[in-house]
Image (cartoon, rainbow, N blue to C red):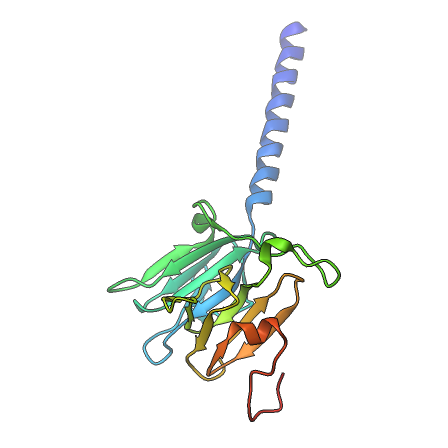
Length: 212
């Protein structure tokens, strides 16, 4: 009887461990959201597929499941994604010098993300850590930031930009979301060169358009 009961007990423990493992695996099967994208569409596209399905062009805001593959086949192209349940962890896939890069979402989520931080303030209580600064949210296209000293860099999701700097949106209908210390988001549409101070102070950015 002891052997039988012992066997049942061991079997029960193994069953519980197996169930826990399945549950944990399910919890890890997360989707990702595209938060940043640059693609030279005359040369190629950033795309994804599920299983043996067709490749589909990725758009900003798309949610890609954990079993999807992401493909970048132009060296100047890139995509940034975050876990759908964690906008503070960002992963970037850059196009290769030759050929193409294909990455499974499930494998991507096993790598170390870049951690970004957004303001925690509100209209009545701005976040003092972000005074005079703007944080990059979702964006589309190649955007260039120039700091107050004139040094330039490509913009990425989560970048903290000095309010005395400038941004250049290169192509038509490319966009960038900028969050201030109160968590107010301003969407800017290109092509446009503008001073970030105008966003911080609520000035009009478009001279001839009926736009904010």
